[in-house]
Length: 191
Image (cartoon, rainbow, N blue to C red; front, top):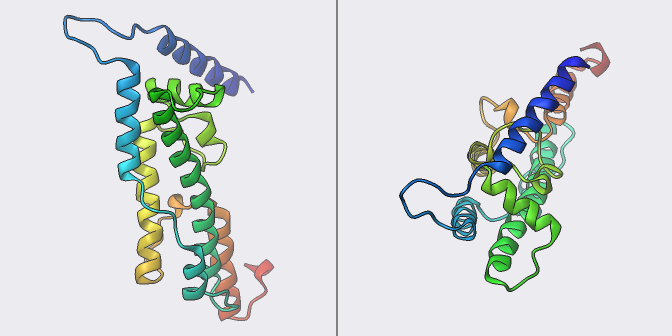
């Protein structure tokens, strides 16, 4: 409990420092926050692939009693599609709000301020896998996870799995246990 309290206080301290940090300074001409966020949003959007085609994944990797990894792949694609949709829509709406085409809601303002301070927006974290990375590292990691799943879809199950790259690692571990138990006809609760 004390560690959690101390971590929370440290997080709040850094959050408040970032909020009070001057947005400009030095002798150089600084870009406005709107320009910065518009560029960051465009950069992130350029890195995001299209959503996974879950229907074709279901056809290519159908539910199979002897291969639980098919189900794991499709479920991961569904989860990442939800997160992709939230990230993509929020970034597009931020760009529209900066241009004055949509109202800057409280949620969009939180996304804007989080991006400005290099943090992952709460809107994204509500639909995301756990991560303590700053925004740049999170996006790099997120794109790598999407690439991992696309490689799996295109080339079949990998020889080595990136366990921490799963959205819901427990589903993967359960699938591995199911495959092993079914292959060697061992009750899964004996593993």
